[in-house]
Length: 314
Length: 314
Image 1 (cartoon, rainbow over the protein chains, first blue to last red):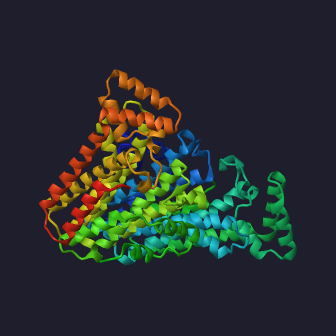
Image 2: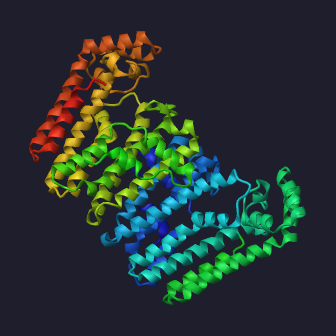
């Protein structure tokens, strides 16, 4: 099996001009779970394809993902990513903008390296996915300014945020390996459900997790009034009195009191259970789709990943 | 003949989310001479190709060019572009970053729309060109920090800045229209020379032009010690005494006195003539290459453009 980290390093980020490529190497060396390229390679193996054929697209997806993080961090003025200073802190903002632009171009250079009869569809899907992710980033900004975001709009937002990348990784891997259109579509849909389960789990863990294993402070989303699955669900099912209390808490200063108050209201409303049910539904749907596909080492791996996602505690 | 401005408008920048697409429409509606798409379509006609086949690539090049201006303006904190507030002023910096990213993706969406058997080469050339232009932007930053930039490094820099886009526009148009590899390469080289003539002319006009027709203040480059063809040539051919005088002027406060002083030194050194000769050489070389290509309405148009570039006064 191909080692993604080695493959990323072998792309040579020590090239000139250093001011452009060093920050790219730095960003990509921070690690992360490499979920997207792993999904692409797993889908490839599921259909007996050659991993070398899928690798360029798998790397393009990982580089694209890191490009979005790099530019998002500039826009959010985030000082830290994966425990290290962000590029605009370690270098400067202009470096982060320009190196990010080049990362996007590097992703497209890799797309052009898949087997030539597969380039066109791979490129079109990649373009569509990239567009959805940029649009999501804009909706994110719009959402923060709105008080009336509905839960279905939120689901659409997280679909664009995480799901389309996972779906596209799976579909592209299967396509290049020679899967049928039906199989490609099934894997795409499977990725969508995996992404939704993952994102709702993310929202849930912010409130309901063990501080010892979570690794981040509990209640960060509550403190900044972030529109999460929990908050929007609470708003949806609260009665008039509960709505008023929630509104009160949202105006409250950030801190332990606020976290405890909002959590108590979530408990009262059964929001935790609603989120757990949603996660479980999306995971079940992903597993159901998986059963319609070839059963082998690769599908086994995907099943394990899906189950791990829905029971993860950090 | 296809109207480029109409074609750009028809891409529909009124889509949702408005926060993402409106700034793109605003940037693209500012006009400019549309030199790059015109070159692509002219090359297409030269070989009897269908303009509709080349149009997506022609638009991709125009959108890419405007994407670089948009992000450059953020990095330079430039408040005005083509007489209007820049996107980061009219909206904000995050909007300029994100809409710029989407412009780059839009360019790639158009590349995917050329006739399908032409997508791969068009994409590879586009990637190579985009990389060169990002690298150039980084060298630009590096150059500003250096005092020992040589004239050949400068030529390489302006080649990457303007020439590769013009060369690629011509080559891509010819390729899609069915020209031979030799003809494609000739047109690429022709574009390189056109771009070099254009950029050196730009440097020349900053110092030696008629304020009445130029439209900008004379001496802007001198005031900010910009490393132009004139300054680097002056440094190259000055004797020890002249070098000392030049150094003195570079430390001088910006203003009419500095402009007059540096211009007098340029006159003394014959820098104007050296620049005019370089422009003339590149123009002649472009015209010579043009003679080896089919002679028709399109090549006539290209000849007129080359001659206009070298005698333009603004």
